[in-house]
Image (cartoon, rainbow, N blue to C red; front, side, top):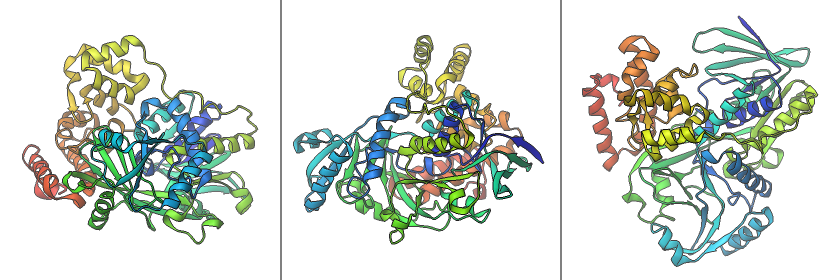
Length: 540
């Protein structure tokens, strides 16, 4: 058994866990983050990508609304490269509740959310697909955020200040001595090695798995696991976030991302923290609800359906509520006060928009326990530092402006070495993935990362296969690079394809009709013929 000593163990590699690791590291507190899968494989990458203004919560959840607008402003400053400042519209339709409209306008004012009414004719010119049932349109400072970029930027910042992490490392139990949590027992899922990690504090930031982590030692965390399903369209239907101005409900928001649009969401309470299946009924229902804002929605191609689990904290005030009735606030749970056990804190609830604030509150608590007096800097220090002008210029000359900018957003300070590799070997500048403009050089760079163990890990780091073709044309191009990096010959590569195709098909299957069905048949033919997969191997 391998023994590790540190000050703090953080359980969970989502945005909140990585945000905590960064804050701890900036304050000089040694910390190790443990994640049972790859980073960003859970809730932090399974949402609609909205950076909330707070407008959705001003009527029923004033505290959450204020936190959202405050963090919205902060994140636009420290994480600008992860955010597209699209703005958002709240659209009031004919027949909607006028009382709710007045409460919403008043609530925005109280929360400090800037609201500007957009004349209808102007709105229809700017967003021609918007329903003509719109009666009033209001603009708020919503934006879109790339959860993958945000998480990796936090991680790289944490590493720079001494933070460490290990993926595919599953916590088996908490280590207790005399009513004090003094660490964790874990297993490396890649090697099978057992780990014994001693620490002074354990932070449970496991999102939908938080209640399971607490239950390992007999503690209880009241949580609601609320599943939301979403649809991805193969084009940018709107240029700004479009919300239905009503009590938040199903299928009432369109969020543009790069060249696609996401429609969400549903709300179902589930038992399992990884229940990510979407059925055809959810797809049909979302399309019906989406017609309220986009009347011709069924003319447009849906390329994927996916789902995420909202880890909602069920406080005493929420006992009679479920799903959308449960507050979106977060809660810091001190288990010494709750269970009489020192050294353990759980952070539950909240939203990705408030991840930094959640991390700050946890780290304040940890710092007090450890008698560290360094203040929080995460609201001021940018996640991405300026890249040298000569690197920008060289990258744009080699790749073109759009591709260079995308690459630099993903790589930040590591851009220089990749650009230099392309300069020395121009063929490395060829795209493996045209949709996301991922070059051979960037793929090779990512494959050198010790945390990349699979093709699916590579996808999360580079966005390879996440564009409108859903990996049809890019995954097979990565074959020689995968074989060189992973070894194991063709058999290992086939296994990696199986894993990725299974994940991609899980999202494609519920939307297999029309153009998407034809596209999927093309993909199936490619894998069967170009890669010589057998039918039973194809994942389809």
